[in-house]
Image 1 (cartoon, rainbow, N blue to C red):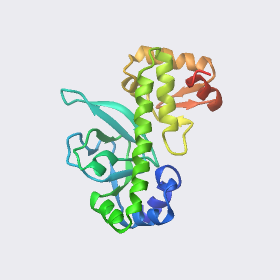
Image 2: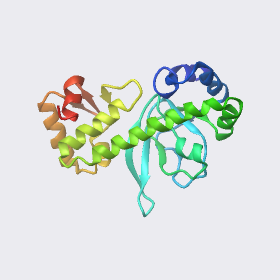
Image 3: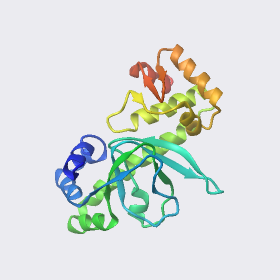
Amino acid sequence: MQKDQAFERIGRDGWLSMTPPQFQQDVAARCDVLKFRRGERVYDAGDDSGGLFGVVEGRLEMHMCTRDGRPTLAHMAGPGFWTGDLAALTGRRRRITIIAGSDCTLLRLTRAAMASITDAEPVAWRSFAVLSALNLAVALDVLEAMRCTDPTDRVAATLFNLAFSNPGGVSAIPVSQADLGALTRLSRSAVNRAIGLLEERGLVRSAYGKIEITDAVKFVAFVRGE
């Protein structure tokens, strides 16, 4: 895929769509296109600070590392999502591990490229700050989901995050029940029961490797406790 095609796709939704046209042009001029196969690491927790990565195609897995260094799945994100801002903006080491959850096409904006943009146009810092605010909101949503003590509520909140933290939103979420177990820290049987209860309510439909939200309005109301 050519860079201009990749940038056109990723710029339709999410962070870049919220930024000024000149900023978008500056980013487009300095990005490069990278491809990762499923299971490949984009970066590891503890790596030196680097740039931003945006998802053009495929999906990324975000893993927090346990004290013994094992990666633990925390979130998944698809096209339009950008990550890497914490280390890129602060110069600190990476805090999370990013793994390709499928074959992926990514755009990379290096720290040097970011500096070039902000040196030429200091107001561009505002656009990078917007990205950090968006990703902070995602992190808070993930934490809020984990605070749900009822398994069905936790599974529903996690599905909500997977569907609606993706720019543009998705109705068919490419997630297995095993992935949901890892994301929610629930047993396979608890996840199965929760999905069954959500299906009985007519909110979701489970299929191989994905879960479809069948009634978005009612599903959102359920997650919000309305």
